[in-house]
Image (spheres, rainbow, N blue to C red):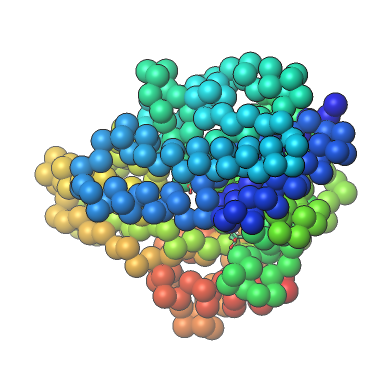
Length: 403
Ligand code: ADP
Ligand code: ASP
Ligand code: MG
């Protein structure tokens, strides 16, 4: 029987009715003659609630304990979904990440998968059962529970689809696919029928949360057929595919934004070799994911280095920069939580000059100041004030005629 991996996000399993609707769909998929492995997220905002609870209890959160706490949300969803399936006469067994054989490194809160020993899942399938796996978690080589980073139930699903040789990995969420912009911000955004992996990676990296970045990377590297679709309407959705010559190459495919970043500026550092290397090595050693970096041209032998990081890494980044500022000879370290980033993405950009100019003109027309700029061959990103970003997205979506 062909196997599909179906992943259901937080809203899709947000309450009892939603869980029963998901069970219905799993049962229907079985009746179509397919084997199913299900991956679930925590119900609704459970993960956020657990993190808030931890913040209320203590400012000291040992990463091992953080992972033990936040992995609990997914575990609840697995058991409830198995009960809902039992009610429909479908045999199912719940598995934590550890029980599913997802072995990770020891980098708590953002662990990397090192191996998957999926024997318990293949045994359950052989017994005619539906394995229901808790997303976002694994067990470390030190045998502690780990989590794989926010949004990483997508990664659990794609990784299981790869090792189990699934015919498809279906990511069920609360929108009908990948859109030309976040449909919550741009009501006339359109759903993309197909997106190339290259564009999807840029969309995810730019902060389009519909598909987690590492899951998109994993799917591309392991050739997992991947689809994003709705658990509310069940309509076909968006396929993420290898780019081929038949694909229409829109100049701009999507306008993506994120408000989950912050900016750090290290001012007055001497302009000599090794300074940036020292700073960014120290940040990497603390697992801080640096996104954009800007260094000004030096005036009088000193310069400012600014970089953006996920807001969740801001405190660590500031601590690292402050601890090094004496050694680097910096005059100050500033942080700014009020930034956001807007990106335009499109494979056709490679062969169409002028996208950058149109982007800057559009932002200028809105009176929006650009703080930092970064580009790849198919993406242009601008860091702007957080208060301006939704206006920027709507203006750019209109300017590139994506409606
Ligand atoms: P889940 O809990 O199912 O994993 P997420 O909240 O992680 O869902 O991702 C779905 C959300 O992503 C949507 O509700 C939508 O607001 C947001 N989103 C942002 N950018 C896009 C985009 N370009 N296309 C579709 N959804 C997007
Ligand atoms: N529940 C986790 C989170 O909120 C993982 C996921 O939903 O993918 O980040
Ligand atoms: Mg998600």
